[in-house]
Image (tube, rainbow, N blue to C red):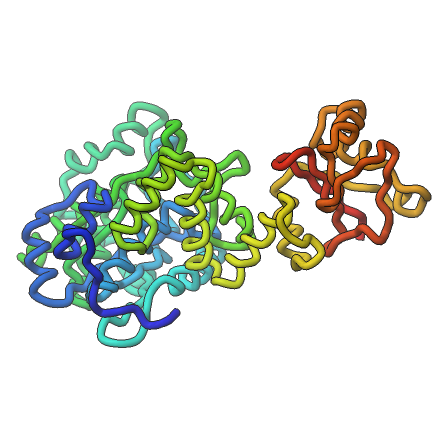
Amino acid sequence: MARVSAVVRHHGGVSDLIDELLARGLVADHTDLEALRAELAAGPVTLYCGFDPTAPSLHLGNLIQLLTVRRFQLAGHLPLALVGGATGLIGDPKESGERSLNDAQTVTAWSQRIRSQAERFLDFDGPSAAHIVNNYEWTRELSAIALLREVGKHFSVNRMLDREAVRARLAGNGISFTEFSYQLLQANDYLELHERHGCRLQTGGSDQWGNLTAGVDLVRRVTGEHVHALCTPLLTKADGTKFGKTEAGTVWLDPELTSPYAFHQFWINADDRDVPSLLRTFSFRDLEEIAELERATAERPRAREGQRALADELTALVHGEEQARAARNAAAALFGRGDLASLPADTLTAALLEAPNAEMSAAEIAGEPWPAVSELLARCGVVASRGAARRAIKEGGAYLNNERVTDEDARPSAADVLPGGWLVVRRGRKTMGGIRLPS
């Protein structure tokens, strides 16, 4: 990425980084905000945020943390992105139950993937250069005796039992000592980074508050230094569902798991009520511009200006400007405002796999003529039945590859096949589906 500025931009009465984080609603918990403000004002502060490889990719919840760290770097501070090669072998306790332990080879492979993803969001040159660290480096040689004597003696079991996730597990099927000990390892990371890099701040989501404060306390007990922790809130949608989830599952940052088109559409489809918090959390636009987008979303909801701004900015940031442009072009073409034949095959395929879709058989392709458009509309679920498809054609509301179909017996041919082996059928302006031909 291009080198980020060493000076944070201030807008709309925001005088420093802490004020900006507060104005964006990015502060849920903190150890001592005014003391942290003073340290940040005095000079560059080294901070870190950790990412455990418990999946093959980071997701939107992780993106909040990556972008928060990026905001600190934009303000001239020194970020460390920690990949949890060691803690990923253990797993932070979940309220729902014990994690399945992944083997070391899997965790190592996922660590490399997560490292490459984290590197996209930070600048590794200049006075505020970021560094990637892996806690496996200092944990692999740590003996059980050393962990218990040098780290464990500083922990109160009573306080560890008070963690919300631990309480929930104890009220259910219990918790293994493996997961219960996770907090010691994460706290030790803070101590190691404090001693190795002079790290004085750890950031994370509010579900990590117990782990963060355990690290703060360990640093104080071992070194006498008072360091800091800052948590961002966990986002939920206006309808009460978990942010970063769709009917298809988690929204990942890896394009192989969530295509750039699907990623772009996630933001386009955001509820109007969520747009203000999403803009403030994820966008690097200044607060005055965000306020304008909030007003536009409230006054002209059908234009979806806030959603489009988020989709374009975040897709470009995560996947690159070229993929963001391809996602915009695909959405426009699929809904009748562009040339479908000009879309790259992989972009068109990714988009249609997110829509209702079906296949034609090799026998159908070999035969003449091909199935009627009315049959294809019903086959992929764009309409409920062939009769409904014929009515749509009669009413002028059915399309093949964005061309209106007026003949109830109309049939596609090989000349209609789009890149990737697709036909696009549509009912009205918004109900679209794909028919894939065998390769």
